[in-house]
Length: 434
Image 1 (cartoon, rainbow, N blue to C red):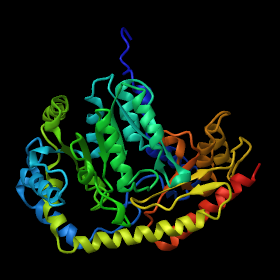
Image 2 (cartoon, one colour; image 1 turned 90 degrees about the vertical axis):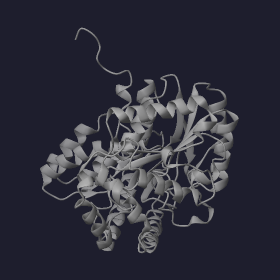
Image 3 (tube, one colour; image 1 turned 120 degrees about the horizontal axis):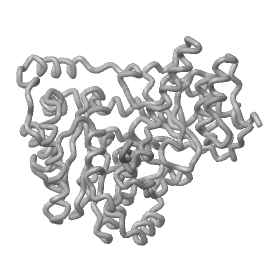
Image 4 (cartoon, rainbow, N blue to C red; image 1 turned 180 degrees about the vertical axis):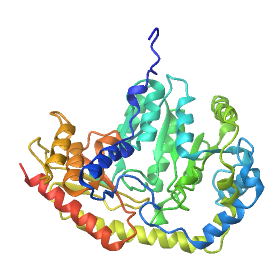
């Protein structure tokens, strides 16, 4: 073409969670055998039933003509005021409804948060990292992500010394990103860790981006606090939503809570650009916003959410028991969200493999695994070919660690048990094969 039309950051866009599904669908076509989907965090797809009282609230709202109209660009005022009052009741940072901005899911919010930064301004994030964040941040800058390590040998806690040095010696870093509870690891960072990260942000004059989509999915809340409790005077964006918690992933309804924007004029101008960009789209979807106050205020909501957390905690313990018996891996019992991450400690070798019975599938998988491929990706492809089980290679989460992420979402306990026993047998076979 006459001029290059490709964005400088196009090569940084990568979402392995969905990409591997294309491979799984091809194997499904070749074999006709169903795939066990452990790649994506969709509770409904994995068999969770939405309570009748939730459906009744949404159903009533759908009968209201207002559910089909535009809403204000920031979002419905009553809903924003409800969320602000709910947060203020905790006694931490105080906000108003005008400090909340709704988006069409957190993917929409994440994209705007990074794309509207000055290109030279970087946000350092965790490794492993949820690829929506790492890809969007890297794409905006046209450069590889800047990361700090989460340490599998220390329960996936952040390497705070490394984080400090990365910030200190890279003046382009303007922001610090935290995912708590974490995706992909399921780690929950205690108060002292978040407080230290807040102190670093204050010391180096940074803002914080906190993805808290799983903030109400913490199994033991004794040492957990949302960022709003700990942020003090540091400017920050907290990203929240209803896709995992209600759960209603198809609602595409998320929001940003802005903390301390009045403290820094430049940060306030940046936040204004988020609103201005949303104005170009008019607004976000109205119906999900309408039902949030009634859903969160419903008398059955607290007990139902607590029961969900107990269920996920039980699955986390069982998955840890099963996978912890495998040689050559590190496993950490998740403390929140609904993900489970396994790290290979054994030195992986190209000769390691899983036996694939179907010759057509074997040929297809061999084509996907050329010399030099990341060996956890090879494991994930061969797992699909040999066991029809779809997980996400850990290298898809912006890390040099080799491993994979699965979920704790399977609603059928027998299928859940079978899935993790299948995973464990595949790990043993792969490690012992060379």
